View 1 (cartoon, rainbow, N blue to C red):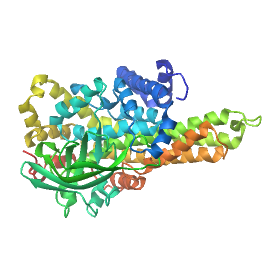
View 2: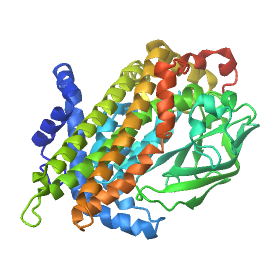
View 3: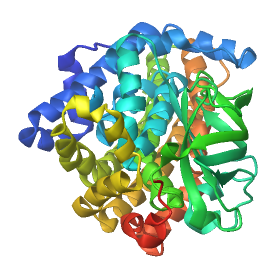
View 4: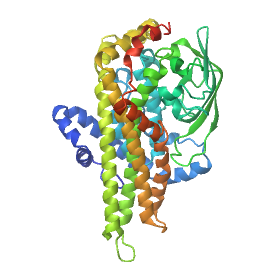
Length: 496
């Protein structure tokens, strides 16, 4: 919302106009929709006050100084609880799910996706602790995030899957079998020792906690793929370098090094060997719809700046008065709206499957346990054990189904691919029509063009997401298998 009214009435009207399905949901759940609209208004105010005034200058600065950290913008987001959006209320978070986070990402990315991706990559790091049966880390890691945020001292998370020789193929079971993996986790007494590197990790250089995937047997990666929670202060962990970037520069992307990095058993997220199925797939099912929203926000920002350019008179005429510009604007508007509905549909599908467990029966069960018990050592030990994780995962398995989460994964891949392509198309089309004449509006559209490309690459390339959509929805040979967490072959390797 460039220089626009960010009052609650205006934002409510716009959100309900953009998402007609929310008007219907509002009839049954008015407080839920009010919470979504209030959060979008908070983001619009944040953009107006903190992001728009500095975004272009920050982008220029970080072209030359790519290790600069924009902590002031992260700290400015603390009062709005941007780091706690998807963390359950039980441990001090906002308790939002995919719908809320997607709306936030679109709004924030319409101003600067680099800033937004700091919060987005942080949420990506949080997701495995929510969907991986890691309740034992809620009262420690997640509680630390929420309480630090309320004190204005951000604690950031990240997620590390990509390796120098294995990128997209480490995000899908069929291709993981052939991946050229360099990372390895070796079991030792009391835990695992990690060796290898992860690359292009958003927030990697500023995160305190990182969810790291690795095979414990590189000869059988699909059967041994495991998720680990790494603290940046662990011996053997280091940041090898921060990458120079073309777009989304404000969010750092780093190469991470693990040299005999010991990770204790309690930091194995879920069970050894189920990091891909359902672990990684479930995490990506949660995150790809918000990535579609990130891309939609970039497209919307490019459209809004192009519209402002088209409304201004040049040589006595407005570009908007030309039919070619009118058709371009209509085409942009159409594609943005379709991308918007795609990510909203995917977000609703996720919230109605895993989300209803996270904010439903699981939280209700935990709320019955007094807080002093949840923070006690015996409780934490129990829920970091095989038995504790099995209890949580049983609840997930009972209250949703493989079919529901597979559909959510398919819709999320659809939304991600549509959004990324839309961002590139809209920003390219705008630049084609703006020509070579310099203007402030063109600087913003050029930035959007550079920012957009990454949305076709991270969270799995758009090519992979199309294959995931085919395999899960058309070919029917990829299913997100929640029941795997209950099979003895998997559970038998659980952490005790």
